Length: 246
Image (cartoon, rainbow, N blue to C red):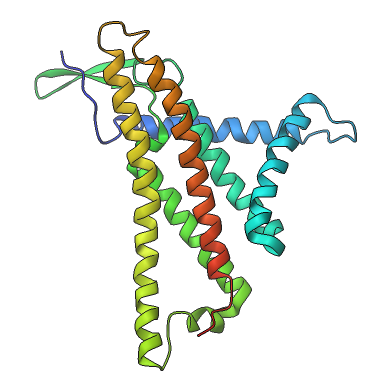
């Protein structure tokens, strides 16, 4: 019997040709919680808000002030996108710190050894999840760039008859791919490292007391990483939707 900390998310079952991993299962749960919260908190909007509506308004308004300081007149368009990234990543990070993550699961035999497979795993400790988030961020950013600049203005950012500007445009295209790598690997690396530390600490003696300082650290890291991803996405959107001036 052997317990291990796997880099790749473990497959739980399969739906047709699609393998369902423990990180995908967590992603579904987090998505469901956010959708239910959004529906319930906005179901009956009143002038005198309920406690749930008041809590939702505080979350949105506090984040709106931050977005408005950067996006200015584009806040109305950018806020729902950036806030969705932030709260989705934040809840996913915090959800992975709940008891049972990495400890509740089953054993299966691989290469003649019993390997423990956790039923739930922090969704952002899977590179597939963070890479998907980064790709979605990139697609939305370029869609908004075309919307604000038009197809002609958008293409001028990358292509020009001037050789110098053409070279700069090619560097810009390369930088778009590095943005995806930067966003995905930064989030994945920090959350996966935290999961490894917590799992290792919990399997040692004093399994209850030893992980406590790391839990407080992961609460801070989870918030910071969600904020960094959201703010970088916001900055990229603001930069790409501005008219370039040579």
